[in-house]
Length: 530
Image (cartoon, rainbow, N blue to C red; front, side, top):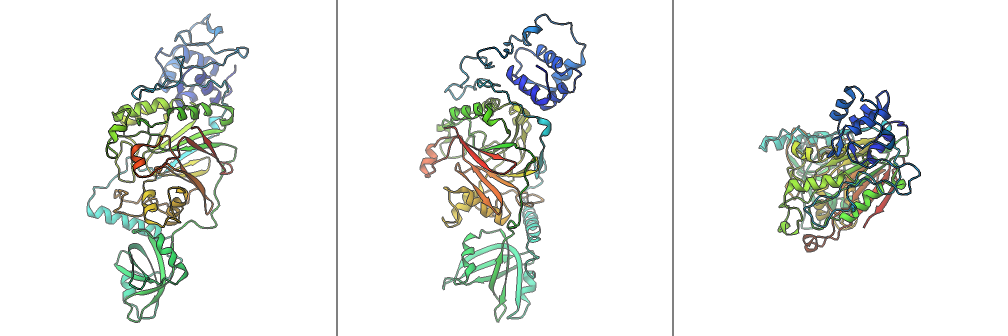
């Protein structure tokens, strides 16, 4: 079978039981005779090899080609003891499992069987050269905060400056100290952080805004049409207000308020070809409730013709269950060692087709700092999660797939949004609507000092500077998606059935779902595997 390009090389190696690094594929494809180069690479692979590495390919191709092997006509792999690739006349499709049963055992401490192939017999034919994947706002390795007071001042000033710039053109902005010196009855406008929201004895609302010069109170009358917006406010978000000063200029009567928001004219970008991305999160390997059968069904499906256009897999955090995340968690663990949890997760990740691009961010159960932004995993964990050479970036990060920007954020702040806002505005049953508020505020975790831990940095990495085409979160273990001003918001559910802790807080998870996004249309199809 001729090798027509990188996609065919990946498919051929996958069918023989190997994963392969991207650069290794490129080296094989650029050889004078790619087919022969692949045969040499496979022949020289040690028997225990699971991943064909770039160094191995370079070593093989840099040596003189050996004399022809009389067994070559029967297929490569004699040196490794692996089965030859069947011809098109074979009645049974080839499956490289190494064991008669490809499913992992029920013993959580045992790694699942390495599949690196599919029993469907379908050969994926995607061309990696057509893909493009770019990462932005990844703060891994860029952390500078020490936790001192001045660091918090710096990050909030950065937030106010960057989000305030989106609002100052809408109002005749004045600093707080300047408004305090204006005469009574004057028209005023201010951009600031929400410092406090409280109700008055007569049922009106008092919103205190703070900027770099001081604070100023704004009274929102209960009978005004925009009074309902007060219920959406979170402390520390950036807001613009305008109105009329009282006679003594000690307060302003609010006439309007503005959020940074997504412009209603926003037009999302789309891919130039029909290509799809699977958006998942909250795998929770290591938990007794990890749904291994659903995961196996998902990865089997990825090898089928129906999923041939799924070329990207984005995982929005909580790859493993972690240790000590909530009370008595150890009683619900199958794998109690955090490093072993990642080793088992990596084995499950190997079941994903080897030609897919994978991007992962951490979550609150993962072995990184809890304070956001969360840097990507350290080198030790990266070396453990080596399958497919996945891109591991910070939480949050923006991933651009063939021109389509995807803001990936694990979603811890959704708990706070749902708790603080009225139920009709945000709920666990419709998590995407809570995401709408983060888009409206142009910040993934606006409130400081609540349940969401925030780390001060030189810049606020949690600001949504540029409007994404897709906003992808997880964390709440609920499935929901919809569009807000043409931005597709998706919360992708989980791969963990209900735990005792979730029962105690009335969380009924949506488990075993995989939202699939057509990047050329931004249409969503949900595949269920449980």
